[in-house]
Structures are given as C-alpha cells and as structure tokens.
Image (cartoon, rainbow, N blue to C red; front, side):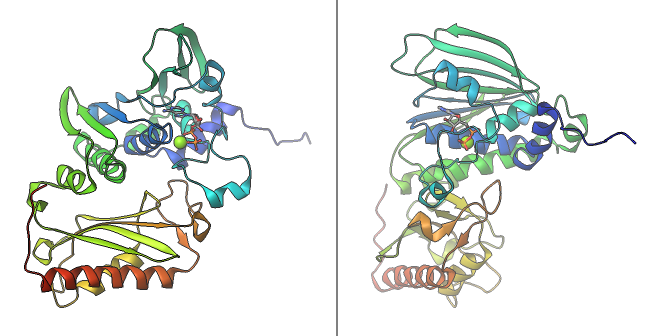
Length: 339
Ligand code: ADP
Ligand code: MG
C-alpha cells in the first residue's frame, strides 16, 4: 500500500484557516480597521459596495509598509506585532496573530497600495488565491489602502452562506461602531454604495458616543470614572430613562478591545437594580484598562471573548463604579451641559 498523507498546498491551507478569521464581510472590516489603528493612523476611511461582497476597502494615513513588508504581510503567521509568546501578555496592539491578511488574500482578490513617509514611491500589489499577480512601484499618499474584492469568489459554498445585503451591512456597521467608539481621537468615515453613512470628526469620547448612537444621548450620559492600582474604568452610562427593552447599546472595551461578557453585563445590570424595570437593559459604553498580563485575549481568533485572571475583582469594581456614578447623578440635580 502506498503512503497516503499529503501536505495541503498553501492556498488550500490558507482557505481553510481563513474560515476561522473571515466569516463574512464584517470580519474583514474588523481586521482591516484594527490594522489601520495599529499602524498609527489618524484618519481611516471605510468604503463598501454591495455590503462588502463586491468591494470592501480601508484607506488609512498610518505608517505604511516597505515593499518587502507589503508582500510579507500576506504570508500566514506574518506579523510585526509580537516576536515571542510572552509578548502576548504585554500586548498593546489590536492584532497579533498575523492571520488576517493571509486569510483575506486566500478568499478574495486583494489590491494594496502602501507608502511609508520615508519612501519616495509606494508599492502596489495585487493578490489572488494567496498568489501575487502583480507588483509595481506606484505614486501613493503616505499610509495604506487595502481593497478586498469579490469575497469568497473562489469558495462558492461560503459565498452562498452570506446573508442579504441588509443583514451583512448591519454586521459591518456593528464592527465599524465597535472600533470607532474606542478611538475618538481618530477620524473615521463609512461610505456605502457611494453614500456617506458616518463621518466621525475627532473629538471627545462623549462626542463620539453621540455621533455613533444618536443625539438622543446628548444630555443623557453620566460619566463613570474610577481608578485603583489594579485597573481603571471610565466611560459613560445612560441615565436610567435611556434603558431599552432590547439589549441594544451596551459596550465593554478591555484595553480598547470590544468584548462580549455576559458576566460584566450582569455586574452593570446589578448596579441599575431598582432604577430600571427588570425587563429592560441599561445603556453603557465602558472602558476597562488593566495590565495586559491580567487578561488572556487569545481565547478566540476574533478575540471578542477574553479571560480575566481575576474576574471577581473586575466584576466588583465595575459594579461599584457604576453604582457610584448613579448615586452621584441622583443626588446632584442634573446639570446638562451641551457637548
Ligand atoms: P496582525 O495584525 O495580527 O499582525 P495581519 O495579517 O492583520 O496580522 O497583518 C500583518 C502585518 O501587516 C501587520 O503585523 C503589519 O505589520 C502589517 N500591516 C497590516 N495592515 C497594515 C496597515 N494598514 N498599515 C501598515 N501595516 C500594516
Ligand atoms: Mg491584524
């Protein structure tokens, strides 16, 4: 009998791995926006056609890439962000797996234009099926533009799993909100089918929240701010009257990373007890900053679930900070300043 085990060709291995990282257009939005943030951009534009199925492009004015790095960036496990495993526990960047661009290049046609400030010309690269089709010097602005075209053109089964444009667009907007909320000092825009949906000027966190969640929150946000040696919490809770019947506007960020945590939602809900109806959900945008060694962000490729080294401390701290903010707001007659 002949031996039967074969190594998969790279582009197939990449397509399989891509399934973990890029499930739908919105996953690419998250990855590309986070890369732009990590590149130090102060302006980030997201352009979408056909709910990202036809075109999904992110243009940033960040650090850009050298010609060699621009090619390397699309290799699997290629990253400039960590060098060794311990780096995971001091991570300051949004990315670290070196998988996003390789995944995108395995399941879409990609066009990259990038230039560093110190280079006189930029680099243009076209990639398809993980293979570089074209590469040439190009005149370019400082920063990086990555365009992802015809997502899953080579994986028809996956393409068929995509939902309607309206549904995929909702996922895209969710991801856009989660990243742009965490960086009010970065300008973001979102243009879909030629129409500008968001234009987020740089400003304060409160301004960014109102830009994203709506004017109805202006004058309805109560500041939360508390610090210990172990952690900081800051952000805003909506006054009790902004509570909703659906779990709508609830955002937790840990070290600027949007996370989902039923446990911490429960902590906040507990603080609101008796101030809102039991069947309604408070609004909040809360940032928790703590030593990266105290959180494990490596539990899932999309990194929305994390593990705290000591989740009880975090729970108690979040709950007491929100309680203090609520007490403050109900004692002091409300002074509603405009933005
Ligand atoms: P990761 O972000 O986990 O490092 P990615 O596959 O997302 O992995 O990106 C690979 C590398 O490509 C990054 O580490 C970074 O060096 C470079 N890169 C990606 N996007 C950009 C960008 N917008 N500007 C500059 N460099 C980028
Ligand atoms: Mg990345």
